[in-house]
Length: 126
Image (tube, rainbow, N blue to C red; front, top):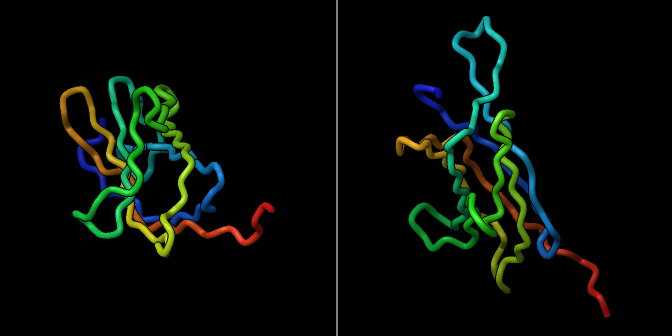
């Protein structure tokens, strides 16, 4: 398990009203001269939340567990997420998010964070 994790900062774009998702791979290495190795996710849980601002109401909450939208590739370090989400009317679709991984011993690591936008669709079905 990594000792300290500095989260990657990324921006994500999704398309409102469409099925969305993606995959992160959590990997680590002991020194810069060594190759990256996937973290074994045995015993980990994951939670990914989207909010307008830190501390504001959660608008999208993904997690491991039944129907939570996140599944883990234990041996490969893969964190798969998928969901359906459309911002409410009048909402600009811009949110902050982060992904928190929690080990069996209770230690948590925020491995990725950033901004996301949900682009509205243009074509409407008649």
